[in-house]
Amino acid sequence: MSDPDDSDPDDSDPDDSDPDDLVRLERWTGPWEPEDPDANFKADVALYSHLEPMATIRRLAAAMDIPAGAIVRYVLAKYATGGSGSLLELGPTMIRRLWEPVEAAEEAATDQARLAAYHQLRQMLSWLRLPLEDDSIYD
Image 1 (cartoon, helix red, strand yellow):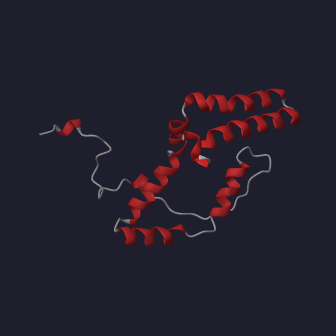
Image 2 (tube, rainbow, N blue to C red):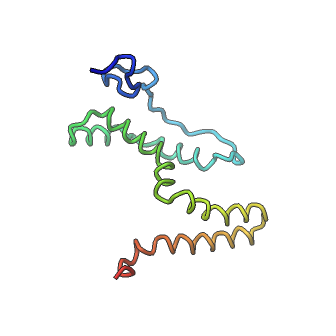
Image 3 (cartoon, rainbow, N blue to C red):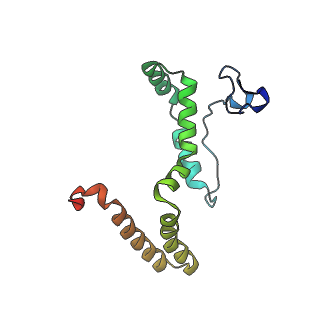
């Protein structure tokens, strides 16, 4: 039998809702400044803000016989950990190698350097996706 003092905080009763887990889905359209470094993300949020995701969530939950809140938690957790998952898939060495041309181009701060970085990244990504596009390379 386990000691109650040794309980894992992530093993909480699913019916024991933490008030911090309650989220109101809001529509948001801005504003933001054009020079905002996060302008692309904010524009994406504003774009998707027009959609009603709960209709899809409810249909999926009903079809799978899973509570809608569990589906929402899954979607949020999967999105929030996507960067970590990508790091695990590519590995830290490849992430560093992909970043090198970008870093060099930003240090040079010229359009020519940025275009050269694009071409280098394109070649690197082409090499990485080759096994996905042509499975005969392993014959």
